[in-house]
Each structure stands twice: as C-alpha cells, then as structure tokens.
Length: 107
Ligand SMILES: [Zn+2]
Image 1: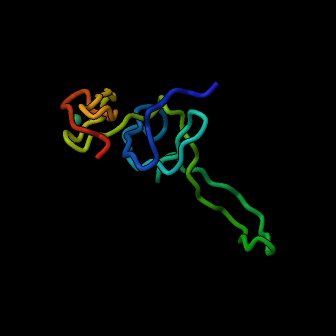
Image 2: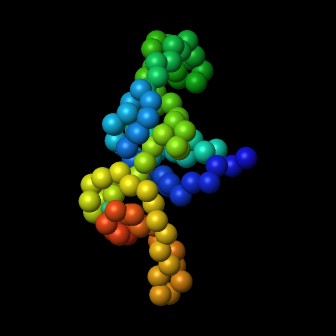
C-alpha cells in the first residue's frame, strides 16, 4: 500500500530517528513511502568492476533510502523541523504550511 506523504523531492528534511538522527539534507528521490536524502544513511556497496557498464570496482558510497516516518520537513521560515499543515488559498490552490509558524513551504 502506498504510504501517504506530502513530502516532495527537493524538500529539506531532518532525520528524526535512526543512525543518522539529527542530520539534514535535501530529498533526492521519493518512492513507495521511502525517501533518499543527500548524504544521509550512507551505505558502502562493494562493487565488482564491469567494463561494459563503465563501472569501476571497489567500495562505492551511496545513499540508502529511509522510511518517510523517520524524517521531518525543515521549515525555511523558522528553521525547525515541523509537521506539515495544509492551507487552501483564496484561488483554490493548496499549499503546505509550517505548523509552527505558518510559513508557506511551497514557495
Ligand atoms: Zn516554520
């Protein structure tokens, strides 16, 4: 079942649980209720050289995905991680807002 999330690629998030708790970064990818955040949850992948794909062998460092519940969006207005509120503007467009200070997160 697809997880309900209102996070988007490019959002800045803070990790609130797990090994990289406290780190912040931008969302690089989001899929199936999991997000990949830059420089967070780095795994070392031991790869074998594959000349046809131009892959060098060795230890490759790569971001692994985290569950969306382990990250929280960082508000550009107040700089804190926050829950996301919804706001419907006069023209009917929906925006995401910071529950702490009301800053529009979709600008
Ligand atoms: Zn805020």
